[in-house]
Image (tube, rainbow, N blue to C red; front, side, top):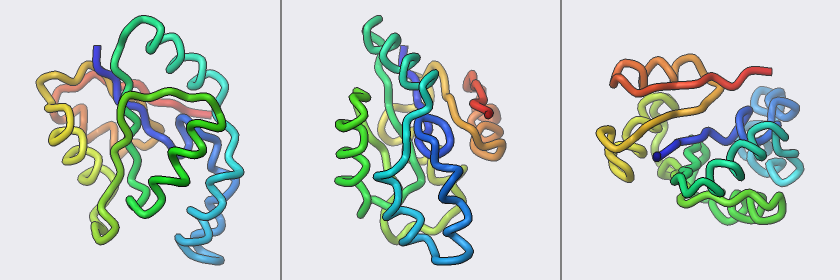
Length: 138
């Protein structure tokens, strides 16, 4: 199986920094990603999926310039994914469009088995493509 997992508010607990978007901007929001803790349930689920030889792809609408910080976070938190998909730095489209395009190019919708994300709009976009989805909610 190929499973796509969202990062912010799904794999990592990032809700605490959401207020920074309005007060300090997106750069401050992304700079603080290193302080996120993983969502324990999602970390365990990803580890179980990997142990079962499933392909786990992390997909985020974070700009690509945060790739090294994001990889560093995954390594420090001992979360193993097969691939990390990130939006281009100059792509300002809605997250739902970005994630659909990233996944379609990297995996192909016909090969995708499951998407796990927290956002209604992202999940609605994948459901419209007849992809099975699970919503992570706290």
